[in-house]
Length: 183
Image (tube, rainbow, N blue to C red; front, side, top):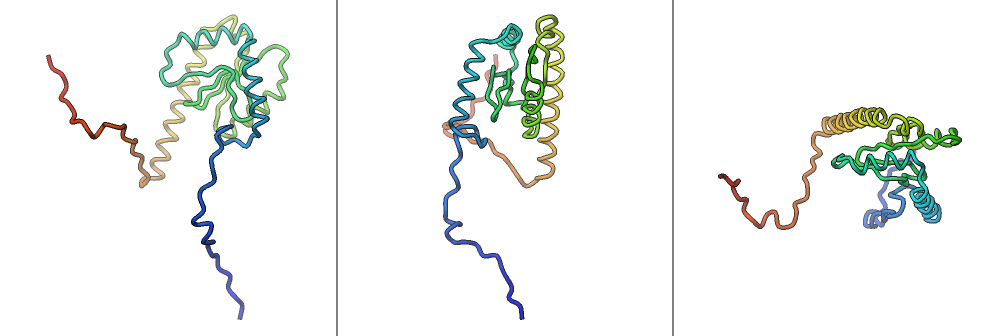
């Protein structure tokens, strides 16, 4: 007669605490030394931005994009992107003259593998026709928002028993709601 193997749970593992989340790198497997170097490099890039980058940053600072804000020279994983919108999962890359395209394509591929869409814009296009670039960017943003909403709907349909209730703010349950003011 053969002995039957069964999977037994380790009682010590069941009571052990969950592993601590890494605060640096937002969960990416990056050493502290590498992450500090990336942040320092991004700081230097912000200090010494190109003309195309400055022009686009100025347009973003004047625009009211609601919750979709773009961060300049943002560290995303182990890459530095020219502009990043975390809420949308969209990164903008400005293609400068003399840039290494092989490294840029490798970076774009790694970002897209984790769900971040990368939009590449030529620096010359920003300097000559910034309105056309902004129209193109607006279209990409609309498509990205639609993709994210469709993915959220698909997730909700696939998981009907999963609910999410927003946490109540302190004091919400303490006061009775006032009727709307009428003139």
